Image 1: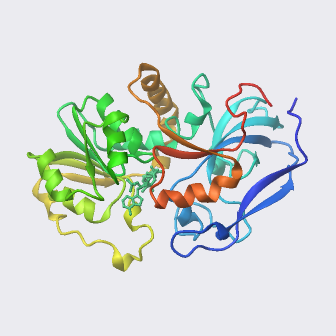
Image 2: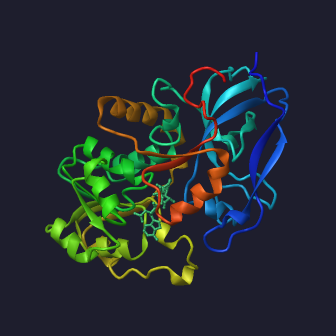
Length: 352
Ligand SMILES: NC(=O)c1ccc[n+]([C@@H]2O[C@H](COP(=O)([O-])OP(=O)(O)OC[C@H]3O[C@@H](n4cnc5c(N)ncnc54)[C@H](OP(=O)(O)O)[C@@H]3O)[C@@H](O)[C@H]2O)c1
């Protein structure tokens, strides 16, 4: 059994390697036939596609963990898809998977672990959560707060990039783990209001308008126990200068430095305080925790159902939006997890 399929589909390919932030001209939208599947293969109809800051670095082959992309190749990215046809007994038509689908309306996957397919377990919740809380950005928030920082009730917690995809969930996770003081850093008064009104943060720092060191001193007169950092650079240095004994710093990302050459990376003056305060600073990578994803998904789904987490999704409509959706992450126009709805009927529970 399979869905009725259209003859053609659209896909975005890499047209040029970007210099700095990409422009829409670095991508090209193509119409191609919907692929036929062979033995062992599965055709997924794309419902949603996610965007993440790291994708700019895929375009220049700057990451060690993603396969090289050539000019003319389909853009790499994860999405949520419904099985539209299957010649693999492990996949049934109608099931919902999140996987590396690429920026296209239909994708073929096979048994190759490269695609990292995970069947969504909690399909009673919106399927868009397969891009946000029940997916990499939610898992990343959980790993950083619970596995790396081991947050407890007495910790004073700080999160940078707090209104973004991962950050909009990290505050909820810290609160669910019992922390009473959870401060978020974001750019601009609108985002800072969102942190306290909608995203579970107890206070905010506006890094674009506040005197950041002074505001941190005001909010943390006795120092910081936990820092979940999405931004890196000078901000991380300010925080290291204010850590308490046995503080934990999780290095989730460094978006402020992704577009800089290494010689322009911030030189940290306060790193010595890690040793002085018997603190820990640790990077982590969500894909190193794959064996636990099923457990994480259930924990996060439970928190959503109990109201302890409220996913904030920033959904654009239509595959045409993909390049702009990615570029705008670097302009900070997103709130919460930015994604694109590829199929207007994505939330229908039957094939359209
Ligand atoms: N370790 C892992 O396994 C893992 C997994 C997923 C993501 N990450 C990392 O986590 C970070 C957040 O990812 P995300 O997907 O949640 O992205 P995101 O936060 O949804 O989007 C980027 C946000 O970062 C902020 N930003 C952009 N340029 C900035 C700058 N120069 N300085 C400070 N803030 C800046 C903007 O918010 P403002 O308006 O507030 O500036 C923007 O909205 C990224 O660094 C990403 O690479 C790591």
